[in-house]
Length: 156
Length: 156
DNA sequence: TATAATAGACAACATGGTTGTCGATATAGT
DNA sequence: ACTATATCGACAACCATGTTGTCTATTATA
Image (cartoon, rainbow over all chains, first blue to last red; front, top):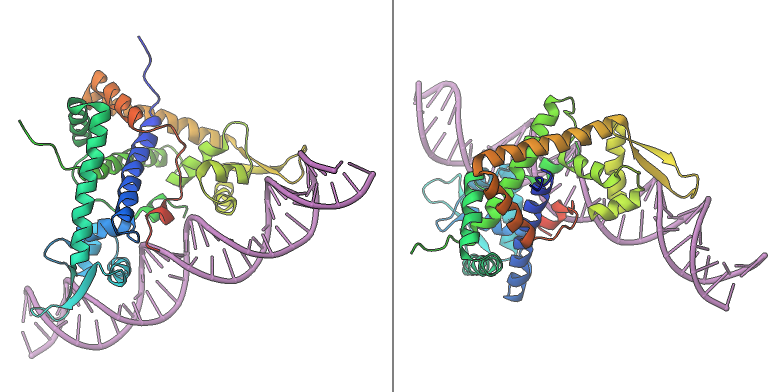
């Protein structure tokens, strides 16, 4: 009987796998006309959603303050991925909406992730990848990604 | 035949699983007398290793500049996890060494990771977890963790 | 109608990375 | 042996990205 692998390998490999996918996505996005988009932008675009959202709402979805979300939205606006429009119902709010370019980026991201998944399927085989995903789902719930990573890792 | 899950779920769940383990580690470390240690400290302590290392070497192992590594070492030194000693062989160098407290933290971390792995084994079953780990290993190589996460995710 | 809650803007600040520069020391080439 | 090159650690400046706090306008509620 062989001994179990040490527990510390799991987090390292989980993170390596995560990073592999994200890097693969952005390499390909850059090739497909989105060279300036960064990982955090992708998560923010997801948080905007098809119907638009306010900065405060996006911040909540990403697990950061509304101010931090506002700065990310600033940069997405500069890059042409979202617009800000005043809300006619509630004049406190400004609704962030995806532009065509923003939607294009999201659609391409989904396609690229599917293709990367296909590559993994080619490595592991169809059943084995399904098992892998099932196991991952059993270990994690489907909470949204928190983007407060710097402070989470950091020294303080 | 059921359809495949969308590819974008994989990165989210991989990261969630990573974060689950790291948070579990630090919750337990805090309970065991290491409340101030942060994720980045753990990786840096690993990078120091049993024989000590210089700031520049630690930076290379973590994928950050020697200056950034130096700041992390400063904070580990303040917390009593490492010391800096001049190298008698090479007086340019200062060797960072683990203190007893640093070794204690690393030993406890290894034990806690093993225990967290046991919990996962209880959920998935022994064979299934082994398969999961095998699959992860096939998808990733064993490169050291890069800690340049803020800039990697960031806007710029 | 008074009070509380929420949106977004602005400012100040903390953290943790970066590059650039420097002097001291080792190392390699001639 | 001497010189050129490389490396170490320190220091400073800068930058990115998060934080909290404050402010006004607006909306919702008691």
